[in-house]
Length: 468
Image 1 (tube, one colour):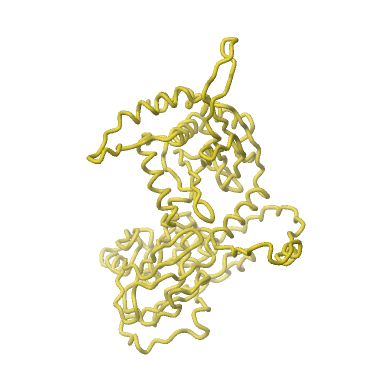
Image 2 (image 1 turned 180 degrees about the vertical axis):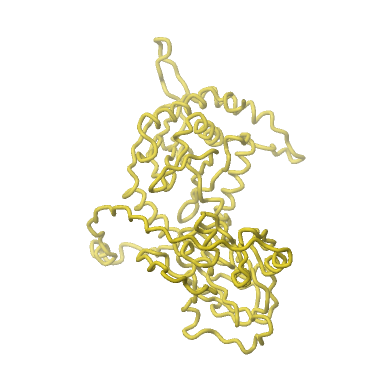
């Protein structure tokens, strides 16, 4: 029986993707780990890796096809002993996406929830770097690896490896995978059979479905396209279709402003000491044979580092909202808003509190360049507990940024400028900037947000504290 290759979910927000390019053609041999296609998501262009081995018998969805739904069959691999030429595309093209080798449902299985994710998410993720995407409800209800799923640990395995393990009664969690990204493949299961693997535990009784959170009150419907267009004279405007990124940004921003109770805290930070330290550090940078310095720190690099250290000093603010609980983070993973044509990315600097200013600077420059080419991986722009949005380079003095869920905060940074202040009873001119912290009131209360902002201000105005 041929093996289905399904349209993968390469990011948590992906619903459809464009099949940009096939890197294998019909009749080619496919090995585990081979890159077989390029998929354009709402955020980036990603490579899809094969997990199973065989011959690419049939390409169902040709390259260049747009808006291919996640979980749709895009190609078929001939199974062992099959004639690739005898395999034909499924009826109706690739539309039906059957579940991948699901075992019969156990007796007294609970009825599917009305809000469950449709389709077999594990199946369409089997041909991608799927350890980047979060598990959905449908995966938790799957019989394959159900014991491990119930304990909160995801097990990545090829469909063939799952079937062999299920038939032999082997616990997949006890097997070390040798496939791409630690995925368990057929040879791993067979090796475990020879070595005597741990038997699979009996599946736990399904937990009672959690009560769904109260839905926000319905809002008045927005005007449709025709209603908006009717307000303007024909020929006085140009229609710009929405791409996947802009659709996702619009959806996320509406969700954030409707469901996250924002409040805002602002203060001014003096920059004189920071600017002097920055000049001293940049002057000490080594130069290559062309005279180019090894690094050049920006004010934003200091901002990222200061926020990361401040979160360690005020750990209660280093948290995210998780519906029925708050997750308090051990490290400061700070997102950095990067504007690109048609939208923005927020790549995340992981463990920023542990990194030097030069390491942060190099990492941000690298991720910003790849973001503009839409070459970031999903794990590079997901996660984190906070973010920095800096519009100072555009001359913006102060603004309020929108929180990117599930983040608990976001820091909006304005332009540095000379200002007159009173010091020791006399006017003085200082370099200063205004910063505004947007807080999710479910996670960060007013006093906690003020404490975080005060710690940030202290680090900015005494920047040597970031270096020790």
